[in-house]
Amino acid sequence: MVFTPWSIINLTDYYLISKDRFDIPAFYDLKGRYGKWNWRALVAYGVGVVVQIPFLAQSFYTGPMVEKLGGADISWIVGIVVTFLLYFFMLRNRSVAPSETIYPDVEALDAQRSRG
Image 1: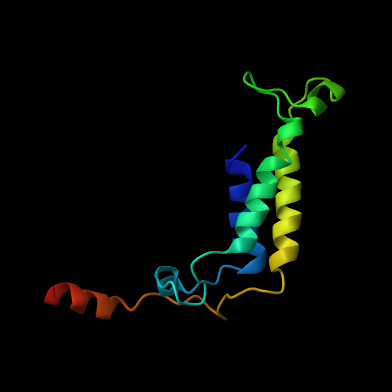
Image 2 (image 1 turned 60 degrees about the vertical axis):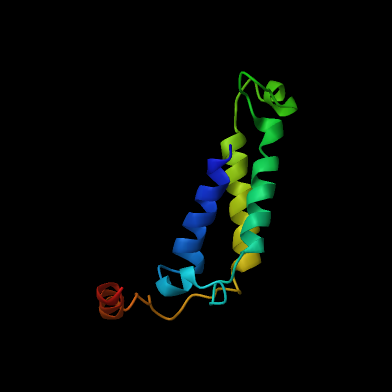
């Protein structure tokens, strides 16, 4: 229930939003292109988890929609669809991806390691 929305956010971002282009050094820079938090991803994640609850069929909880579906647990399908649609439409025009992947400067990192 909690992994499905996060997986869909990552896959959607990788294939449809960023299109396999990342600024890898910026992942570690809080003031970089990605910033501290992606609030849109967090909202999509939260909504994706919550919308699954009525469709969840587990030993500790059975949602109200499960009986209407003949006992089927389709929470994961609902989580995939809702999370994907919400995340994709919130971020489709807001990508911060570079035009091509930016890799760390390995030589500078090696020089820094040898000094310290």
